[in-house]
Structure formats: structure tokens, C-alpha cells
Length: 76
Image (tube, rainbow, N blue to C red; front, side):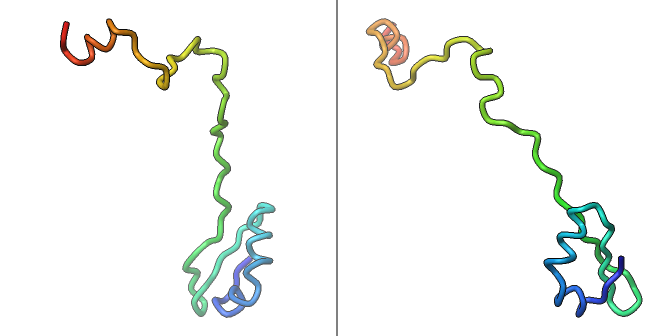
């Protein structure tokens, strides 16, 4: 489908829905096509996908032992 800029302004919601449903939506200035509306692919990133697979992580809010603190401060 090809639309003029004016028609695209008037029907933007419909054009977005058409692009999301797989239709090719082209916007033209006069008779010259200039842009295409395409959906942004959904991210495949999922939070927590590796939960329980990496072992125990250190608790960074727990105080260090005296030995670890000495190494960290360069006293050892």
C-alpha cells in the first residue's frame, strides 16, 4: 500500500496496524515513495533465563572476612 504524506498523517494508527499485520506500507511525497513503515522486531532477551544454571553468586552486601579485607586493602 502506498499513501501520500497527508493521507498517512490522517490514518497513522491504521497504517501502523497494517504494518504490524505484515502489510507493506509506503509513504510517498507526491508520486515518489520516500519511507516505509515496518514493525520493530521484538527482542529475544528474557530476564532470568539462566537462573539456577550458573551456581551461587557472591552476596556483595555481606561484609568481607578479615583475610579478604586485608588482601583488598593491600595489607597482605
